[in-house]
Amino acid sequence: MSEPFGRRQPRMPRQVGENLAQLARVTSELTTAGSVTAVTKIVTHHMADALGATIAALALVEDDHLRLVGVRGIGALEASEWQVIPMDRASTVTDVVRTGQRLVIVGADAIAARYPDLPNASRGERTVVTVPLRVAGHTRGAIHLSIPGAADPHPAELEFLDILADTCAQAFERIEASEVAAKQTARLAFLAEASIELAKSLDLSVTIQRVARLAVPDFADWCAIDVVRDGALHRLAVAHVDPTKVELAMALHERWPPDPDSPYGAMEVVRTGRPLLFPDITDEMLQQAARDEEHLRVARELQLRSALAVPLLVRGRAMGVLTWVSTDEGRRYGEDDVSFAEHLARRSASALDNAELYSQTRAVAEQLQRAVLPETVSGTDVWEVHCAYLPSGRTDVGGDFYDAFALDDGRMVAFVGDVMGRGVAAAAAMAGMRASVRAFASVDPAPEVVLSKLDGMIQRYGTEQLVTLAYLLADGEADTIHLANAGHLPPWVLRRDGAVEQLPFADGPPLGLATEPRTGTSLPFAAGDTILVLTDGLVERREEDIAEGLARLGQEIPRLAADDLGTALDEVVAAVRDDRYDDDIAAIVLRRATGPRASADEVLDRELVEPDETTVAAAGLVGVEPLVGGA
Image (cartoon, rainbow, N blue to C red; front, side, top):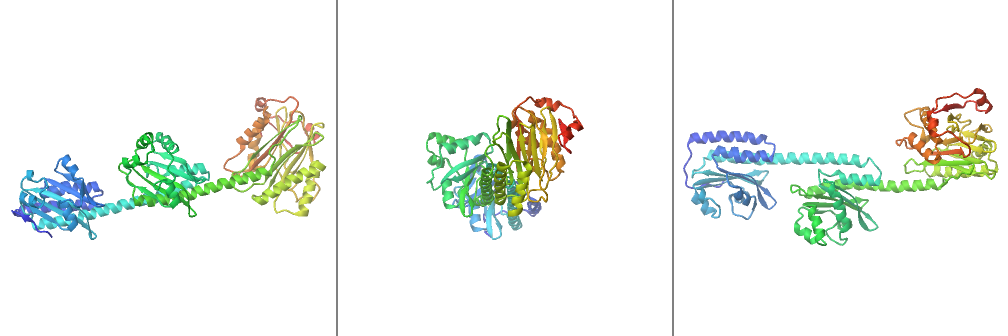
């Protein structure tokens, strides 16, 4: 230990005993202190009071200098001069940190001789004691005490001070370790939550916005996502703690896009796959980067303080850049923040890549599915026909198919089918079935004939897919519809007077499974009548019996009385469908286009009316359930 020098006036034993008792209480306080602020207050107040010090300071090592974290007994102006102390500056604290040894100087003359530049002359006779904060073999700071009078501290006091300094250093280590652990725990929790958030959607635009918002405001004041497209960076999302600054940040990027050749920009991150860190963004840096005065003004308005940019890496390539910016003086990014941002970037890049692949695959699937379906279905002067098709949104192709076309004699053919399963095989079977129905119908359009030929084709050539089909032939001259149903959902009829009928369920098994010739059913179909044929994706739910879905659909059928039949069909589908159910929806609605009919409002106002049994029997509709105004 460094020996004290200067004049010595030993303390009285009673005074020493009182001081030691107070120092012992200080030790107890340090062992329970939970923050740097609490430790600083204990040192600069309680420890100083125990020794009668009127000036007390606590300085901690920070990079290549000391930072004053607490001071008592000097004016604010003088304290500000000592906030940052270079290690090469002559002072008691820098000497103690360098040597790791306690320093005691007794008397103003001795202090002035050792440190002639220190402002002690005006403070009279004093004794200064400076002790190092040592822990785990290194010195992390120093405590400086200035005591009035030129009195030699008692050896017991000095020894106690050494113990207190070590306890103080341990308290800082404990608090720092606790803060690091809490910070790491929070970051791990954040990454886990971020992974869940990123997995919630496969929509690319939604995912990009989530990535941008995840870190704001906990880890960044604003965040930008730039993605590589055609060799250039395109800003797709910005999140800011101040929503009014989002447009400003986007405008800054659009009006003054980053120099692609700059070694300090986002493109450099893409080229190298390595992060960029700017712990402090100075005004000089802004001036050097600004293209003009307006650019500089906008950049200053954003109040940039610190920034980092990390690559969004997927399979060894950078698909974009994640940028965090701090506008808070108290938040400066460091290497640990870069590492944390890289963890988030890896998760974000995977989510963005999955979303992009999903979007591309889904688009291809929908294009493939629509390629094997008719682009439009056309009616005639007699028949008004409209279709609705909604893919499930999955990336594999579904098996719903439909078509409608007029025959040369004026009759209209319409059908809706469903190939069980998904994927290319289902799409191929769907395309084959649609083409086969059209081919067989062109020879003989009778429903029982077409379905029987389809049965024979499947039985002869085989298929791994189960196929259901509802086929109808509408005849305006005979005022009838002739239909056959191979394992498909029953069609619905809306009469021109508003009566709603659910036709019987399938009169035969799916195609290829019939053991007897198919039979058809005829029903009257007058001017103004409407028939709806659909697939089960509209009404089927996993958690309920299909009868509930059909009843729900029955409540909406009266909407089809509207003049605009296409819009009415869309409204029925929208009212009945469940977005949570991932199945395709296909529907065709056919209406006899001539003759008066009840309006939609009149239909919805009707009461349930049972039809005359003789009328039903005459129509050959045994088992038909007539409904008016609902199921």
